[in-house]
Length: 377
Ligand SMILES: *Cc1c(COP(=O)(O)O)cnc(C)c1O
Image (cartoon, rainbow, N blue to C red):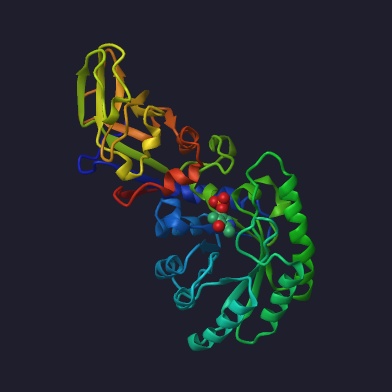
């Protein structure tokens, strides 16, 4: 049992070795010539963008992707000039300048934006690499019209001021058991993207997120864009360990107090839990202000001394309470684990997500800035 860090109320420990090994595992599934692009948007899904980007590169990723211009800018300062950074999201005019300053590769899906980009590129003195996005059925960003995609790609390739780097799409249901819609999207993409690649052989086609990457090589093309699996989270929402993925993030706090409750006494706002008999209750100084969601009130377990104990009562902004049962050896100052392993027991992000009716992505992304990230490995 690792001792609680006496200086930290709550800490997210991020195992960068796990990030590295998860990337090596993903890269090992790709055929020669297919690149692994590690998606590190939203502060590396809450794990720390810069540190995780470096670990991903050590593990075999050759490219990085983010959602926004500011993310690209921060990442460029961290990883240096050589690593390709791809901005997947929409950009305002001001953001376009920031992304160009970061020498990022950009997404295009309208002729207007292609023109604006080409005009602005001149002021930056280099040829930006652009990826034309085809909306094959996600129903978000991207050109929906197959011929429009071809026209945009040809226009980009013909424009001296920019470079056509890729054609890409994004799947809506790669994480679902039923593959029919996924296969429809794949077919639509192949029909449009393969002829474009015949005309422009140097470009990269890409479509797969983590779930599609794990499904098989027919989704891989020249590059895969993996996010959630890089962090050891299961894209299918189950236990990541059977896939060989290692959860990189664990969330640690401690027992600030232990007190005796008599039958009927309540813990927390709204008195949503009352002691069923005489029990001991631990108070842990972590709450929804740290991103440990209030929806987990009376709905998850906490690890103390390598045992699972039920979280009881309503989670406050800064505190939560745990039922230790009628007898306990737990004393104030002991470490407690909210996400992660302790002496062979584990509470993972997938279990918390299920209790909340959400996905594991939101569990780690939701940890607030108040939680310090400590890096290991
Ligand atoms: C976030 C994102 C990804 C990564 O998806 P995961 O499911 O986390 O692997 C890939 N592509 C796009 C366009 C994204 O927005």
